[in-house]
Image (cartoon, rainbow over all chains, first blue to last red):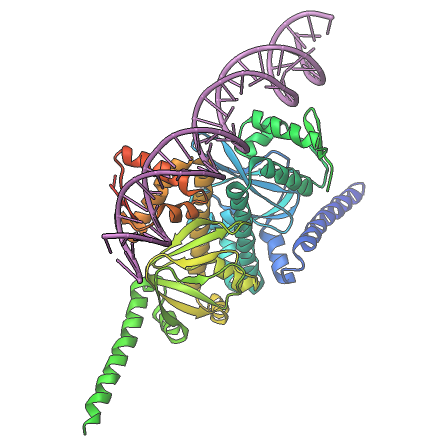
Length: 230
Length: 230
DNA sequence: TCTCTTTTGTAACCTTTGTTACAGGCCTTA
DNA sequence: TAAGGCCTGTAACAAAGGTTACAAAAGAGA
């Protein structure tokens, strides 16, 4: 007698929880996939909440599942021999990790590190499903190709930045990208952290940031930078 | 009476020509594709001989067919705002152009330039077949994924070079790659041409080459460089 | 052979980026 | 509120790479 309402409550809570999952899936991927595929993703996928700063994939790791981003952002980093980093690009809602696709198919180790840039929601798909869906769903195939396409475009942009831009231009672009991805004109990062991601030294970044401030483009504070949008 | 042997000769020549095509296909792609697919490629593909230096694809062009390399090598280049170039990587036998895949699917313009590094043989595949085969042949799908995989790996290597290496190291790597791709320890190129591909100036390249010569790693001549393999 | 063009060598100088060193400010925590 | 750790600012210097200028050597063509 007492217990029934409790069960009912739990049941409804659970139902609501599951419904919200499929709903979030539909919001992010509904325009790409048919309902059948969305249902399958909902069935076999594991929904995860990743806190900012968490390392999802590290260099040298084998990968057993593939993430589909629902919200938040993930940064993809490359490492040199000395262990210093370089930011390659960001992943956002509707993106997946092309490197993971690689690793899944090739059974090779990860060449990159993936770190949550913001608090992030995603679905992890077991790789065996990937194979299956590639044969079964045309929309999935297109999604995978489209992902490769986008990632290659981003890598080209990265190459452009490194090869063609000077450090002050790269820094401006970096700040701009950070604002866009976080949807916040205040960037919460130290000069040291920025230096790491651009693969240079803290002193260089401090110097260039001070220039940008003198030009009235940003305002420097401790642990954060206010960017005046243009 | 006179004419018969002529026809016979022509017929045999043509037969031999066609047989050699499928034979070349099998040599390069026989381990990847089933006979049925090889036959289809042979049917719908156009075999081409490309002379060294020929521009296959230029930036901004729309692409209507996809090349499968049989022999030779193609270099893939990126361009900056001033029209200066940067070498991204080489394609060899068994490779295809991932950028082309992109463009075909996305119907977007080419982001890169493709130039024959050596005299090159290839088969051009119409893009509509690509779509069809992706659904039909598992081996084709795997080949396409594998191609993306390889291209992304090469782009990561390119990024490593640009971001992590100094110009003298990049130059050494460049010379090494050239020797490997052409299978010839004598590189036929001027300092100016090398400077273009590394996106720097002729004076810098001359300076660094002279250093390498002093270190006994190469021998400089007019229009060519002899590399002492290590 | 003479001239013109292309290619290479080199010096001198400038800009950009990287390095080292140190001081001062802010925050946390005992 | 004192101590210690991070974060930022800045100077001074070093190294790498880019620019300009010019000369000499090699080949091409008349």
